[in-house]
Image (cartoon, rainbow, N blue to C red; front, side, top):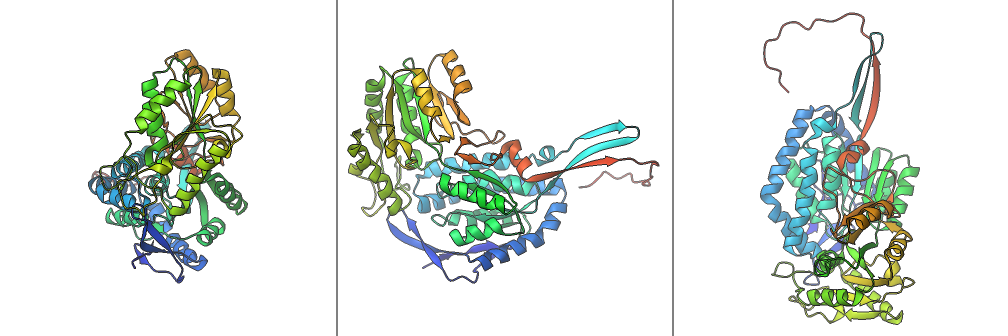
Length: 495
């Protein structure tokens, strides 16, 4: 069976570890390949290669680094259908969703192409008599990225284009559940002209993660995943003296006011709740319905759900399988918990008849009404196609419900009342807010990140905050008593 190997120094790297893990085709329910699991020694070797490549990449002109990023963007645009097919095969999401993921990641690549502007410092002439003061932005060195299974292309692209543009070298540890996208990206960066050793992929499990977190030559860690692991990554990396940005889990609410357009709300709830089989940290998992609109809203959502076709993402389907059998069974267990806790299962995804092989990891869209806030169905991040409805009597009650939660990643309000929307964006304790927008993921030149237990550390992903995270600032105070003469050169300056 084929083994997905590491990618270090511009080529495939087998490593010394003989451990592997299975990689599934979720729509078939069968193992399609295996992935190598790195040892700490393998990680050491990758970091050494990146460290050796760093000085030359750091010292390369901004114009030449920029040309590599532009070339990578053009290659990605031309070949992204190849990457989408890899994502669908290993994750299970439908091809159109995989293409959308790549498009959102490509936005960060395009943003990073502006590194000439984003790496600029500041200059003050004559801060004191004949004394000038100016600042420089310089890269950190070797940086680590640990990415999750749900977006095997987009989430790494939240970080590595910015890190590379700033002059750093990268060690990417992707999810072992769907590892091949990372290797494909690494090969494309090499084709774009990125020097060997500047971008490296090390596959693995906890052993590789722990080695990356404490390695003395790794200067920063960027992580996206569940809250318990995000906390562990943040605390371990920070204790080892690293910069850490650790994005955790979520329980995103959609507050629906009585004046909202219920047809729009129903479409938005279905799209945000069941896209990518609910395996999104920005998925809407709780609809907070302000009475008296709950009953008609639930009817509208259930009606929309009836049109969702579940099946193999390579076919004409709307929603694919879940990533593994274990995860599918865990998500399905929450439906049973809901019934025991007195909630009403309006649409039961366990009854789905998919357009795909019977062994696939299928679970259909599920709608649960009157979910008690004491239930694990409400409290846990389920990370699957389960949409809960909680009924409240007022805007104030709905707001308090959202603000009292442990997470603060994303939220949305649906209303035609501009005053209510403005009040909500001011009062809600959440980092990313949608107003009649169900999945408020910011565009690349803004930064992504939540509040409370959805983000550990002070730095958010991409945007200007991303460039600040991947650079260090020097401030220079300078005085020159005599001007120097560089001689004549009438040629046009070259980069």
